[in-house]
Image 1 (tube, each protein chain N blue to C red):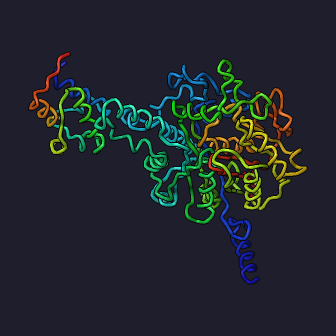
Image 2 (image 1 turned 120 degrees about the horizontal axis):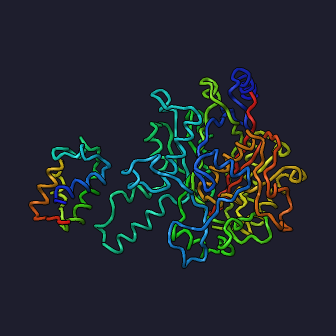
Image 3 (image 1 turned 90 degrees about the vertical axis):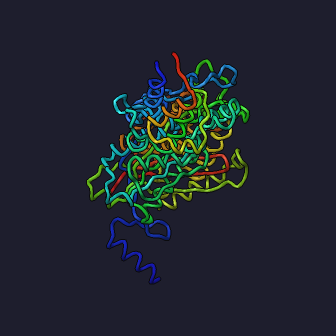
Length: 437
Length: 81
């Protein structure tokens, strides 16, 4: 009881603290965003594509895919790496590192944040990736196979390691605080942002560059997902229609590549430097299915618990959620199970809130998905526009919610939830709220 | 293209430096911004291009552009193009 009184008096004295569950935590806000995606080489260009309901999926060009069942992907278009790295770096870095350098540069500029001597030790980086430098692994394996071990490049290992995106970003911008890399399959980006927010709310850092990156449009990745029957194979001739979440004719996801990073800040830090605040990150949930390496459990119970954990973390009621950016992969299993999970969590309110899958336009960016989808939630709140689910021509009878079909919808919202679910049974849910003092 | 010109063009490409920076006295690490990994990569490229083998103890002695040229000449490396 004494403890309880103390806590409440602390809230009174420190407006930057909020009571979440049983603990006192610092509030965390988003002040900057950067992205390279199949829809564009910046957040502005990507968001414009989202608002127009444009597909970023096209023919796969990164390697000769003639013999592959799937010959489409969500690749970056017209991205010039030399805008962000010099020729020497271009040769020694894997694409996933270059994408992260590009997105971080844009995110820091967007936040108007320069990491000087004072901020350095209080600024950290967590950039998740499902696989890291897969293209380099494949290339160098071929070199060793054809030419023997002496043909191995000295840059192989540092180009492959998944944490090197965070490593290079910290080096480039002088961020000397906490550093990490969540490797949680398709939840990597969301886990990175959730974990980074916790470091800030618990006082270990004031600013974090966080999100996810992936550059895995490679022979091994495409053939591997084909072998699992996980990706779309039916629409090689009409790529823009291949990703169709919640539609009865969906036949798997489409692999995408890119990066989405945000700048997270402790509220007092953002206020003291007069930063523009896009919104607040109020809740994070992370649960495990403990069920199967790839398939969700009946009723997607791990996802149900995860959404509930995130709501509790945010101190919010179910009825406060206005929009859900679904995991919505366009696989037969996920979309039906996720719909069921949303109904289980939200009950009657599931009929009132809007749900959409931006993967219908971007494809599935694997470890980067949680990064770019966080940005879409932030933009939805900031701009008052709900991203559509395109290609939803014939909704699956098992998918009967409001998925914002075909066209973006103008409507002011206060809150958004982002779902990410990954192989290994990793669930990650983030909740965002319009910033109110 | 002479041997020297070929060596310099490889260094320019690998280390992303200009012809002006790439004088024979230039130190890879102090003047041309290379690190130890760049040096390993550079030497691998030389081995491939001139069909020579450079042992690790010989690699340690290579500090400048001139060191590379002297080494290649001592191995009888030639370049005609």
